[in-house]
Image (cartoon, rainbow, N blue to C red; front, side):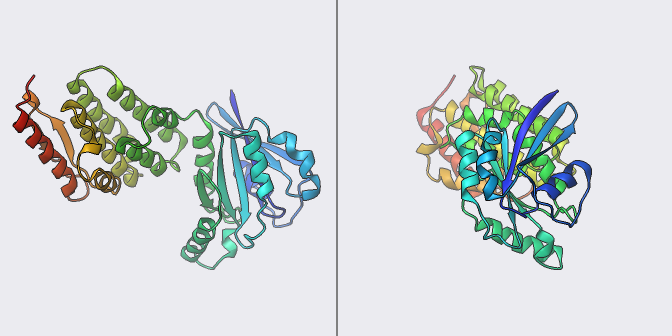
Length: 329
């Protein structure tokens, strides 16, 4: 059984202990009992286990807890949304010092104290979290008392600690490429879905990247793109349609990238590549492919929105280039 170490840090009385107890055993108490040094609990799912280390927020014991920061796989920084000014940067700095390459999730606790309605709580919580400075993998507001967003947080814990094939796939791409941007957006869209689905889509995405970077023919790469959408769809189409849009965007950018490679040009040499990526990420899709004899055509598939004119412009530029230079196999 694999195990992953998660360090939970934050100021005193931010609800760290109650949050972990609620997630692990569904227990909750409104009586505040400060943690002494460090508490420990575990969360298991399938063959994976998360070891949750609850670090005391007492400044007097801060030095004593530093050894517990080592070799963590993920950090949770908890902020009391009803009193967000109690922010201890030294805890974040200590975590980053001991774990420079690991992610930190910002968790806003006690969102139920912000307002009476869920809509108002969510709006106020998001505003507070967005105003907190720092580099975080994601930001989420929760209520241990009402169990608000605890399932989403649990998914985040597993999806950010297990070996992430999304990160491995992204590491193979240039961060300046539209394909990288689209794939990163897909990762962001599905970060809250159940672990099994996240891992499946991550593996399918890695397979796509490896196929596109291989020495196989353009026909094989086009087939890999089509298989990518087909394999992802069963995991997302019913409960996560917003993420499925991002899948189509990745496929569209992959087709554009393939097209650019086939005719010998990069997207950067065409006008408006930034607009192309932006349109795709927003959910607008146009599929481009190389036809027989390198005649480039636009194969339009309408999924959710009208096809963006910028993508059509790329196809037109490609066709013009092909016709003027009489490219052939």
